[in-house]
Image 1 (cartoon, one colour):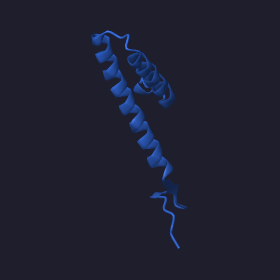
Image 2 (cartoon, helix red, strand yellow):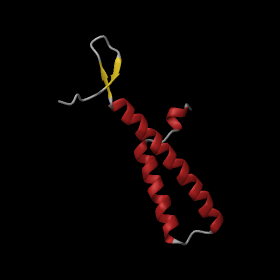
Image 3 (cartoon, helix red, strand yellow):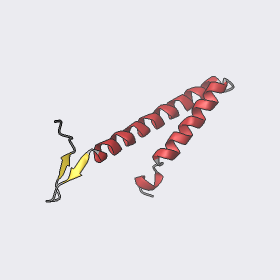
Image 4 (tube, one colour):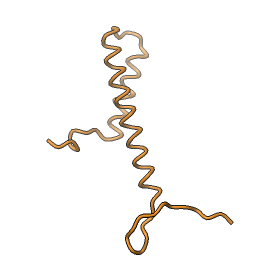
Length: 77
């Protein structure tokens, strides 16, 4: 399988992150498992952050008539 098929969507990653946080907040998780879950949560948080930054970057671009990309800027008066 390719990396893209194995990679979770933003929504799936965020949902998993929320599940982990709830489990850790319950206080019923053994220390070793809590550490493992914390590390998994940090990886998911990083993945979500990267996806948001990528989306933000692509949403702030505009396609010119010649097909080139340019940063979208709103000119002030």
